[in-house]
Image 1 (cartoon, rainbow, N blue to C red):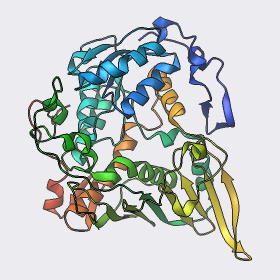
Image 2 (tube, helix red, strand yellow):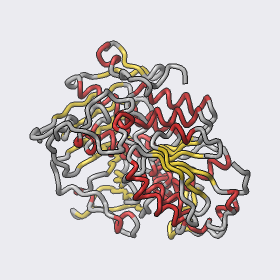
Image 3 (cartoon, helix red, strand yellow):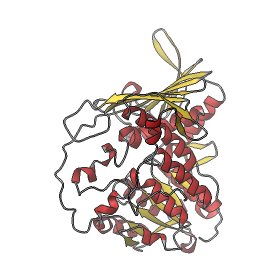
Length: 455
């Protein structure tokens, strides 16, 4: 990677109406960096080009200071349908294709890797990328299980790599302002934080095992997960299968868990309890659709409440996320409520802003302070590029992402053990006095897709 002054990619940058908060500039137009000379651009590769991966690829390519030289996906159709669109954003230059991303890791010209695979691949792909000398932007959740998450952190530190987790709310100026508000003591003493993840997502049938589509590398798709005959449901609905993930708390609720933990400044819980059920039982989904988790910290309790059978609970749309308006909080699917001794703050993710409520007057709510937000994808990507250049620690560093994901893993273990209360050892990240729970901190890997003891 060529050395370059930050002015090359901050040149002509502008801020939104939020201005600069907490030292972060929110670019209203990431193409403002388009004048970056070709030999100063970051050479990027992407692993996993469907859905979120394609969105990230377009966003980074559209910046003008990054160029994709590799597209890696187990499905060659993803390259055929996505790569031309990326090439159009980078002067017609087509990225190379690899079904097995290990080919790409041999290319010393690649500066950074974007990982947007299903979660069971996140840690191993991160470790291999770090070992190959690449910086990493990895989508959340950071890991499939507790132990491999810690191994990912070790690899990032051992090889001195920048690893940004896709917890983009950590780059949102309005949330940095919320954190300062809390740190300044304006809510008073905080004893309770409630985290919500509510929506309408029903069950689904299980397909019959069959042959994989021509050209699709099903063995590599399974990767670190147990071997299985190709199944279309497993391929499409991996979020709700234990072999690939940990359900909606793991895949989506992690955003709110991370916001809550970061805003109030806690790390490892003392104990974790979680219970719930899959009430919509007509289908193949394994993970719960209803779940309540309780995290005990020193002088603070945090709860996580999930319902997937509530279609009237809505995520904020982009009109809210990028506009001067707030959600209707009682039916906002992704909020965090922070209860202080002097006031309550309701926080929305992905640009939904925050409001602080005090005692009502004449039966009407009183909002003492508030701040609108903006969708934080662009500043999070900007932060990653900045840190690749400067070698600074990114906003959502892998260790921060790991600790937040641990909360989800602990809750999952408690749930799968029927609601056993787990006592957490913050020194080892293990579980005290419970051999069954301790055994669930990791998984059995199959060769060659193995997270090794020595990374």
